[in-house]
Image 1 (cartoon, rainbow, N blue to C red):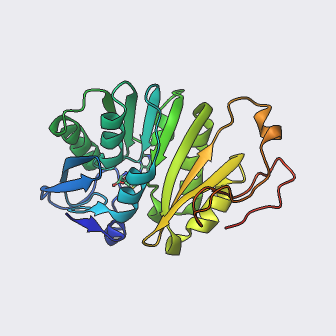
Image 2: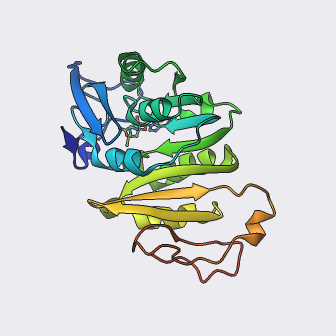
Length: 245
Ligand SMILES: C[S@@+](CC[C@H](N)C(=O)[O-])C[C@H]1O[C@@H](n2cnc3c(N)ncnc32)[C@H](O)[C@@H]1O
């Protein structure tokens, strides 16, 4: 089963609205512990021919609401949004993607996997999402677009969360995952390191259920016996000792 280590880095133009070059579709089989997902991929899209390792890790550890509205931000050909829709059949899932070729593949892949509770929006996320709010957001962000752009997208995604919602994101450690998480902690009251594996880190940035929870959040500390799981990064609005990993 093909899983690509950092495959997205092989094509610097995967986030173009209209990728150049001829199409050459290729189907991949993505095996997760709970299901097999079939995906059409193509030239000019992220992780062509192989599901990215970071995407695979995020899909394995993310915990999503059974109902409500879930966003796959920068969906590519749709792996995360499809898994979210299949695992939470009562939820509605929106996949948003700027790359038109990838978005068309995502539409095709929804049908291929029998997904009926999802939609694909094509365009720049912050523009096409309008005023939509979400109960969870999942993303393998476009690090190649640069940190300011990634932070803009993550901040917008966090602002769209309903109280109690979570933003789940993955990044490669050598591509600055720790720094990215610290920057996210600047606008998200609680950022948790959920998993570290194969050079990737998965984080969960939660929005408290009520505004008062911003002040009532517990201090940052490792709440798990597992070394890397559930380490709060920082709580800027409390007396927390600050970021730690
Ligand atoms: C790292 S790839 C992840 C793709 C897919 N989620 C996966 O895991 O295979 C990031 C995706 O975000 C898309 N993207 C970049 N900037 C975007 C934006 N402003 N709005 C919507 N999508 C964007 C890129 O085209 C790319 O497909």
